[in-house]
Image (cartoon, rainbow, N blue to C red; front, side, top):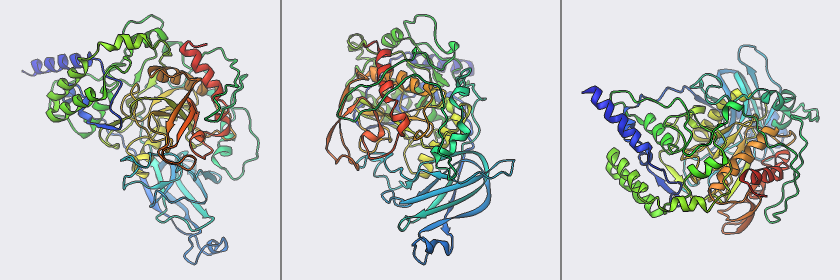
Length: 572
């Protein structure tokens, strides 16, 4: 009986995974996590325990020095914590009660490295973080759990902390220091997709230790800016209305991935990633964690096997052939989701089957859109160890993707590429548990070695609604480059990765990386709600909001990214 049941489950999984998955979904429709779940998901083992944690410590007045800075008798102008021992952590940030309140002042921390007893110098934390987040009129943007927050800062393995917050005016109420432990990686270092290409990190991190303070606000910054990587390219970003292209691309078009990562044969179907999860023979193990993990993996099932740690790279020709191009209407997808939600596991198969009944337009639509770049290798949420129990259930989509906004994480540059998954897990936990967001804010992340990571859940090929560019999250996607690039030059590998990713993802939606697109503001400090704004289709965060993000040095490389992205698509 048990063997027969296992066989039936395996057949059901294979049948469902063979069905094509739509790229489209109705605008801002919340899809049940069951909608993309294979029928055999209940046979999967429980989700692994990911022991990340967050320590939340209330700040207190620091004494008479506060009043010398103009604060009131209650010490509102200076708060903090004296040096203290704490449980291990790797990332810090500060949150407060009112998400609309702005912290006008400075936040500085110093930390003690685990096992050494050595305290760091004071490091600055970026306080202007309100420009990241969900649009005001969305359910996520109006959530009562939202907090005001600084940007997070990566400090590495630490077990001691000291913090001081100095305000130019009364500080927001309810200030708390958040200390995030990312937990252990679910796979050995590098196993989820060999994140360190030979020689890539050495070039990417030249001077990283010296520069880590320069862009994270270290008080003792000498003002020097050693080159992070040797580059012969130049590029200047343009404002949203110019559409001008003033960059020169002198690169060869190669990236930081190893040759083993790139398929060498022509493909007529999806190239599948190894190491999918194998369903066991017993049922009854379906829990909240594995259900969320199942849904997250299933929405990428047309690109890689269920449970894969990465989605493989494919050639330009394979990407055009294997990726459906938005064939279904929003109504059809909504109907499939409704059937799945109402009927449970059986309804999942029925709903997915309904979605598969309207594929007639797919080949013609794909043929009409020849400018789809080669798909880069993408490390999935499974690969970087996202705990799917943290985020809200379900996914939220917009109608399409018209533009990509590039960001920097402002977490500093003092990380290795093997630590990038830990950085992502820390930011994810900070976004959800500390800041009150529904999920990781950005759609994709890129590290200094040029590795690309799946960000917000919902499917890498789908128009997932993110929380990255306040006022312009609808019909756009957000790409965050891990690091701080105000005075540090971004590594060439990271710029190349942005170009490759946008060539593929914008190509899926028929977008020219060197073109422009109009988006309607949902409200912000630069454009009033309802304003129709023209952007470069690869834009910087500062184009839509008055902010320094993505940093002057990264912003200056966006012209190069546009040119390279268009070339990857096969455009002149």
